[in-house]
Image (cartoon, rainbow, N blue to C red; front, side):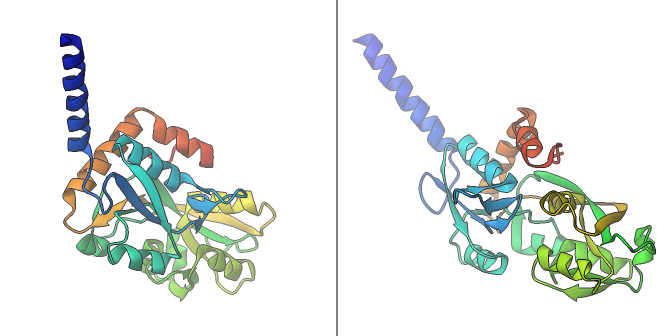
Length: 252
């Protein structure tokens, strides 16, 4: 009888502790994650119509750490952010770069990707060998991209597009001179299109960090996600996910 009583109290204690560790979310016991679902290899639907990708796998691992189920809200970038702003998701996992402007609107959790800037050019272009050579060149990117700001800082003129794939289309057809992006995105593009006539002309010292964003003021959730990401890094889980998609660890 005493053993049964002890077991009951122990189970109640475990449930209580788990409740304490669960973050406050829109739906009790559920982490609702906003992501595009069209941005391979970070967030996309595979041939079996399953949502997968580097960011998606990390979001699932974080939810598991927080003792939460995970649900995904997928939509194109602008619509996805609008849904998040309207309070329909708890967090965004979608390669969101850390910028001062975004810090005014959102709270960031611990970064889970570290990437370096690269100048992508047509393979026939030998005029660009460093970031200083961007002055006066046409660079294709979205209006809000952090890399567009990097290119502009070096004097490039931004040609606005709404996706990386459209940027690369303009580059392949020589309608722009460069696409300044991170090296990881380039390597994935080449993996998908090995015959594309493009190359990395130069890599810079500019480093970009991507991290989950939560609603401004939701520091409790941001802190718990950060703790989960740190644990996943220390356990080698983030490196495992990274190598699965990129062949190397891009989480540190």
